[in-house]
Length: 238
Image (cartoon, rainbow, N blue to C red; front, side):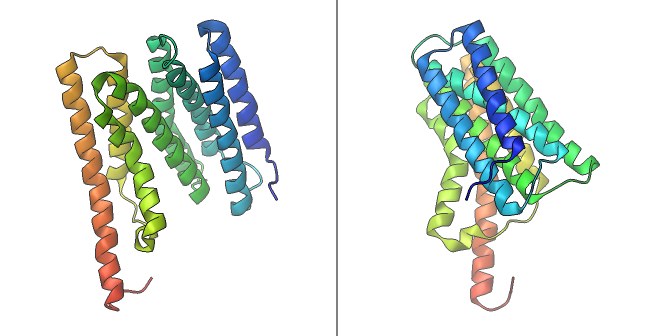
């Protein structure tokens, strides 16, 4: 049974309020509304279920920062979806995405300084990061090329592979470089979305970001594969 928590409910209400503000100031269309409401509904359900499973009654300080970032990602999602039907206010999209990226550097610091680091908070942070990258890649793909979607889809391909091959579901060791690579994707995609750089330089930057992402995921897959072999030979036990 899904027990409603105040944190996710507040996030849902805030998301709707922000969508209303976007509609009033930028003329958000039906497509944007549909995407924004779908995103906020899924976020509400997923976060509520996560809190229920973790036995958490309230969000921690860092989780509230992540929730604020999640609502901004919902605004980006609405604007990107709306861009398929009408011209997008690029300045607004980029500004909101930049604030979301800045908050990404804040929630981790808050969690460590308040000693409230948790698996739920880490997972919430990671999923918000992944979805922002996916949405930005969808927007950039229209001007740079469909291949940019690889950046947004890679995290979800990795998760899907874990459903097929159980050995890919093992918990990976902490690696700061993984976070650096994720942040790089967001920064590069925001620059690409803003269209402030020459096209050639934009393509080179996005290719470089993709190369870093392939290296990071490739290293994780290699680690998982090697430990699968070690475990099969009976040389390692969890």
